Length: 382
Image (cartoon, rainbow, N blue to C red; front, side, top):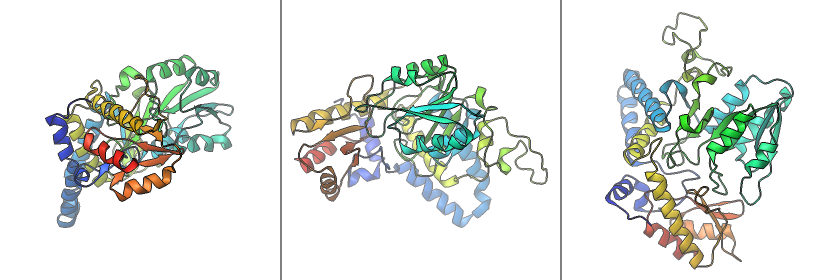
């Protein structure tokens, strides 16, 4: 594994959870960072002591969060909406898209439920959801391409599979979808915060991610990217005072939508959640996260590679693909002859945090995790 340099040590020091836990579950609900915690505390003091007098300061800070998020994915700030979660972003696209009877959406049968139900819910509007089977967690893009036809309007997939850890070949995926006249929606929640995303180079049309996993923010604060060319395509839902051009002129009732992605935000934001998310985004940016930087990804992959070697040494069966182009920070494995739920309980009792998904144990370490965390995991499983 790459050396645990001073930079990664400083990162670990910014994660209060590491003082007690071997926290290997960032693909579930991650701990928030120290800077995010401080941002919440600062907001709480201001909310109690200043009330609405602090609102202009919060608003300017939240707009900076939008700009920071845009920079991290290679987008423009006017292409980013601040949303409560990934599900909200998916629904804004699913319900706002100009469907016609007979259209279809292509997705994968092993997607997280939030990337299936919103599309399936369109059946009453005459839209078919085609769920492409996935075997052993390995996505066959030829099979996905074969599911598309002249009425496929959207291909919606996860960047990284939540249970398997399969990392999608995005540029190939986007090319095959666009060649068939379909737009691409990317559920980026399991990759954003570790792997570089450049929406210009990759070419996705829509992207959503909540901040409570690899971005180390609180629940209820996420982002939605809508490519500028598609802004006028979606019918905005949940229209509110913040959706229009003259948002702060409450006496002027004129439904002229804002020309940017903020038109999809509707009303008041989760100020404290997005302020905390912004603090974690700045921390990750300082560690090298950016649209063209693989520093965090290299570190996370090194940690998971070491985990593979240590787990195999005690008889574990690795269930995630570890091919270089598809491996990720999610590692699923089994301990033959042992109950994964029971093993997880034993690990939690020893302050080692992991999950069970799809009948397998699943770890998902971040870049601040180190050999000592893996050693605690091995001791629990041994």
